[in-house]
Image (tube, rainbow over the protein chains, first blue to last red):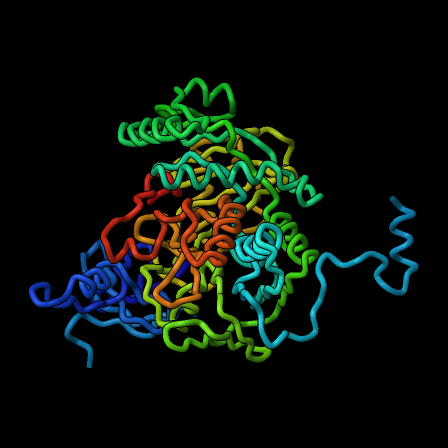
Amino acid sequence: MKLMTCPINGTRPISEFVYWGEIRPAPDANTCTDDRWADYVFNRNGAPGVKKEWWCHTPSNTWFIAERDTEKDKVLRTYLHGDDK
Amino acid sequence: MPWRLLRFGLSKKHPEPRMFTAHDTLKSSYDVVIIGGGGHGLASAYYLARDHGITNVAVLEKGYIGGGNTGRNTTIIRSNYLTPEGVKFYDKSVQLYQDLSTEFDLNLFYSTRGHFTLAHTDSAMRTMRWRAEVNKHYGIASEVVGPEEVKRSTPQIDLSCGGHAPIMGALYHAPGAVARHDAVAWGYGRGADMRGVEIHQQTAVTGIEVKGGKVVGVHTSRGFISTGKVICAVAGSTPRITDMVGVRTPIYIHPLQAMVSEPMKPWLDSILVSGSLHIYVSQSARGELVMGASLDPYEVHSTRSTLDFPEGLAAHLLDMFPFLSHTKVVRQWAGMADMTPDFAPIMGLTPVEGFYLDSGWGTWGFKATPVCGKTMAWTAVNDKPHELITGFSLDRFRNYSLTGEKGAASVGH
């Protein structure tokens, strides 16, 4: 069984979590060009690497950030938004 | 037969020509370099040589032939898609497949079985009717049938699916088939090899040289080669290659897992697919049940499989076929699926001149192998997209003109 550590509820089976993709800052909708906006909507950083991702522990609806190596499938650390020290 | 075997035993050298020529060195330049020695890459090489007379071609494969998603899919071939672009494209592929065994002089074990996509809900029935109408409009044998037809084809099925997902009907596609996936890659590889194409296994691409927006060469683990045209057919490794030329794509990688059961007597003639139960199953010529499910739920760039997967898949299989409760699973594996937001592939030209993409093949690439080879060869030769692939261009994600294939591409999405 794969595991994920929720910053609030501790280590739980990964089936209790949902993955919400890499954190991607949105461009300012009022000022950005159509091309830039389409790039934000569709394009992804698809190559392997260590990525910062949104995850949610669904039973408690805890949203948090996981730093994960997507090639080794190894979670390096997890923390709540704003706790990135 | 034993005498023939004896010849192999007594001969100091392998007494028959190898399937592929081994090349000790790379040439300094090629007309076309194809990255990826899977079905798609080898088919592209084959049609470049056969249809266009271009034989100064290198196929570069990091591992071994057909070792990626070509050898990891569940071998289903069908054309009952949802969009006109998809239906026309996959229909061409099914037509090409039917002649391949003769063309290669190699038995692909192409076996037309009939393909049922089961519907367990009203909304699924609606999609089936929609698909049937689009299919029929383009001359594809495809129709909505009731549960009794499913039962007639496969008497062992529990139509109530354990009581929680009763089958309301199905989309029936008579030309649905299975074939040996390795044989497809090997057949294309040998055909290309015989025509002078060089297949280089154990040769990784480490960089692509672009000058003035144009491809000029490829760096490999065995040295630099110059070329003006590169076809990229690497499925789950696509983002690594597109990063080398600075082309942005919407492709994201999730693993897709599959497994086979122990062999048993033939009992399952049809191919059965259920979107709601996240399962597709057929019985191979060897008697094994070949089964797949939906994508793993998060991005991973590796081919390790998990325990959750056979647990979940087996539970759904037992909903359909309770009598299989003592059947053993003998193998499971995973492939890296290059997914796109609209579940259609990304094919053709890119912002880099001479760099052609055959990608975004997610969970639906094997059935398209012949037509991909044919259209990618044409596209690379003419430097414009083949008419069958204009709906699959990378540009569609800049113009918001997607080719929504989600309802027909695979299960559980």
